[in-house]
Amino acid sequence: MKEVDAELSTLDRAIINAFQGGFPVVERPFEAAAAALREHGVDVTGAELCERVRELDEEGVLSRFGALVNAEEIGGAASLVAMHAPADRFEEIVEQVNGFREVAHNYEREHPHLNVWFVVSVADHPDPDKDGSDRVEEVLAEIEDVTGQETYNLPKQREFHVGAKFLVDGPVPDGDVDLSGIGPDVTPVDRSSLTPAERDLVVEIQGGLPVSETPYADIAERIDADVGWVVETITRFNEEGKVRRVGVIPNHYALGYTENGMTVWDVPEAVLDEVGPAVAALEFVTHCYHRPRHAGVWEYNFFAMTHGRTEAESEQRVAQVRETMAEHWDVGENDWDTLFSTRILKKTGIRLDERADSNTE
Image: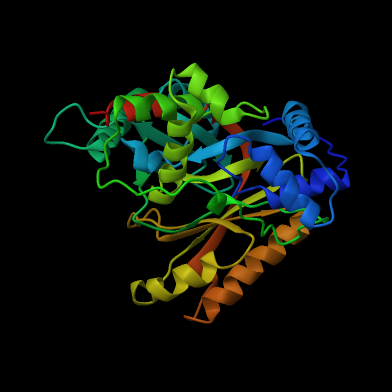
């Protein structure tokens, strides 16, 4: 991940705060977005707004601009996996794990035993009697054969929250501009598979939209589709959950959020339904899941990801998670841990084209 010493103007701060979600899906979205900023006291035209978003993208302050596709709803499967890599073989094992094209992200994390954490992403299983989770297990068996190390599969059993928002001081401090409702009226469809045209659209937008005054028209031209259909389909995908949100995606390192802590908890099953939503409601928690335990090796069943600008801020946020937990059960010292990432080992992104292909009619 590129680190940037970001010096942000008032307009930059307004863009980052206002448009991490809810960006308009209309033929000329920057005009509507600029009008919304003017209502918040930021004097900007649509053309000026578009130009500055493009510059922020090129400077690395933004990771990208566009639709955040929900891979889980597109096809295939993904799972978080933990592994122990002995110090004398660490680099060798990491290289072997990263050599699998199904491994999308890989991090070294602080833990006395499970120090390698990666995501496996696969297409649907070619055998109609099996599914994506079966294919994940096959890949993990292959990784174990190559590395000689046991893997611990931690698939998501319940999602309480996914919504990384990184706000900065400046206009629209609550990030509450939502212009998703100004697009076309659409009706969700009752099918999980994709049509060939929808597959082409997903693959085209997965890396972001063109930063132009007519991004949806540009996408339509690339896939030889009608712009009205592109606008309607992205709007429908947003309602159906195939797209989590449309907007700017900041490079959180550029904004100073350098502390990345994965807090893990051994939550009693009886209070999970209460704890999950309570922790998910904390504004600094970006991901929140229920995952399985592995007896004798991994006793935690609840994951909450936090980010902070400093070590002290990160520790304070972890303490707030614990305080929230303590409202629902008696949290002991051995009932939780925080695994800070110390190194990014691989970050290639989810292969949505393969997952979409496997789920296309």
